[in-house]
Amino acid sequence: MYTNLLQKIDRDIAAQLKTLGVGEKRPEKYQFPCITISREFGCEAIVVSKLLSEKLSSEEYPWVIFHRQLLFDILDQEGIKKDLEAAINSRFRGMIHQYIEQLLTHKPTDVEVYKKMAETIRILCARGRSIIIGSGAAILTSDMQNTLHVRLQADMEFKIGHVSNHLKISRKEARKHIEEQDQQREQFIYNFTHKDVHDPHHYHLVIDNSKFNAEQIVELIYRSLVLRKLLPEV
Image 1 (tube, rainbow, N blue to C red):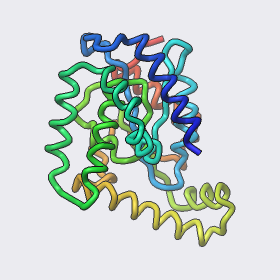
Image 2 (image 1 turned 90 degrees about the vertical axis):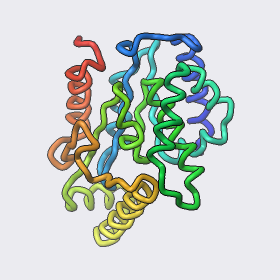
Image 3 (image 1 turned 30 degrees about the vertical axis):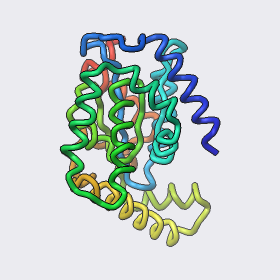
């Protein structure tokens, strides 16, 4: 299922390495931005990410979307991981490992797997032109200046309607699924970081998806990138 996505990422990284120059040392102000999107289950994070990638990408500078399963799959692709690391300088590599060691002081049984994923997230963030969905990415990259952290939330009625229509299940089943998924996601992040994904202080933008549709949310994110000087004013 993810083979084509991994091949796309491999091609994209190769193209970006050619643009960036392996080991190239650029002033920090020229860092490409990275967007993290945290969401309550039932919000339109995937749709928003796809529209945002289309808006931000160009033939020369493509943007890539990453989610948890894909991040775990990348851990098994050593060639991709090495190319990613080569795209950032040694100062960033040192910061990546140091921050993760300080953050993940709690030791669940699978902490080593999450640590590798966390380091991959920070590498992708330092590389830029990435949209990272979930996995506590905002928490894992909170010290990095080229980031915009977004949280999508919505009232239960909106989420039930969206999940019910998308999964073709009853509203009662949709509510149960939402509650279970949100609990699992929140616990997953808390187990490793002891931080609450609901805390608005982790994010630059907290957007109510029941009041703004996907296209409007993309415009809000795009404008915020410009205002934070992570993208040039057009």
